[in-house]
Image (cartoon, rainbow, N blue to C red):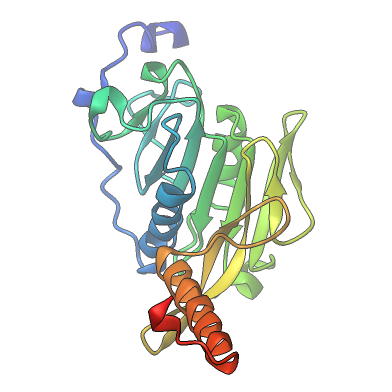
Length: 231
C-alpha cells in the first residue's frame, strides 16, 4: 500500500479518541497546561480565533498513520474556531481545521522520559509547529538540558532561543516561569507575558490588586481629613 492510500479516506473527529489513553505520571502535566488555558480565557476573552488543548490528541497526516495521534501536554492553535461548531473538541484533527497546525506546543517532562528531546522534536518539526517549549523543572540535570527551553522552527530546524520570558511575536504572547501562591502554598508554574515582559495576572490577583489600591486611596483621603465612605 502506498502512502497516498493511507490518507484516502480520513476519519472524522467523531470517530477518533480524544487521546492515546496513556496516563500522565505527575499532576504538573495536567495542572500547568490548564493554568495556561485558564489564563488565556481571560486574556483573549473577546477573541474566538484560537484553541488551546491540554492532554488532547492531535491527529495529522505527517506521520505513519493518521489514526495515531501525538498528545502533547498543551498546545495552542491560531486561526481556528474557539469552539468548533459551538461545541468542545474531543480531539484536534488537522484535516478538519483547514490543515492548521498548532503554533505552540508544551511538553512537561516527568520521571518517565517521553521523547521530549528526540522523538517528539521530529514529530513537531514535520507538523510545522512554530514554537516548542519543554518545561523540565525536576529532571533537567538528568536529561542534560535546562529547566525551561523554548525552540523555534527556523528553516525546518528547531533552534534553541534565548531569554525569559520569551516573546513569541507570531503568537502575540510571551511564555516564562513564575510563582503563584495558592492558599499557603507557593508553586512555580508557567505563565503568559505581554510584549513588555509583564506577567498577565490571574483574576484573583487583579481583584487583590484593586483592593489594595482602594485601601491606599482610602487611607490617603483619611490623612487629608476626608471620610472615604462619604465620597
